Image (cartoon, rainbow, N blue to C red; front, side):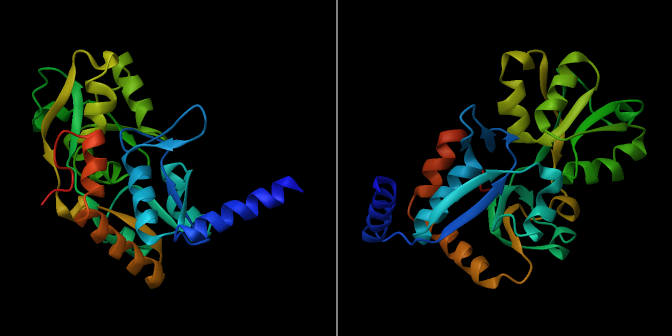
Length: 254
């Protein structure tokens, strides 16, 4: 009888603290540091899970963050396997046909990661192999631009796999969010001799106005609650505290 009593006690404690019994389930990519990463204990850590926890605290609900491969994340949301997606997903017109988005919660340009000294121009792309995350906005942009310049794309289910192949010489560059390429590869021991190369890529036609939290089409009630909570954590300092934990610059953008 102890376990039921303990559960009831925790439930009562949550209610007394003003926390609803409601649980919001967020999905995120489990291998996209510093935005998200799954530890050996199964716990999700990183900027995205921390923002999810802060939003739940603002809404006074319980929070669960679950891993989901990025290339299947929208179908899984539509299948009601979770309530929302917080996975560094760019707000684009194409994706808005499938899901509804909150206001942006950050805006980060994409960059190529290549050997130090690489001169990225139109001629550079001919014959180059470029690694991209499957179903990402980087893949869409690269297919419409880099491939036309003569590059070949290699797609991956997880971003770190492209860094492994870059280190091994199986691809010539990886195309990712700038912060991911910098923190998860360039600034690590494996990234010695590599650098963020070429210009920022942030064409609104492809990359939208930033990254948002996705909910199922028509779920206006949850969308409004999340937007209200986003404004709250921006105003009360919670967002800045999380941001400074992972980045040395303003990731929210203009």
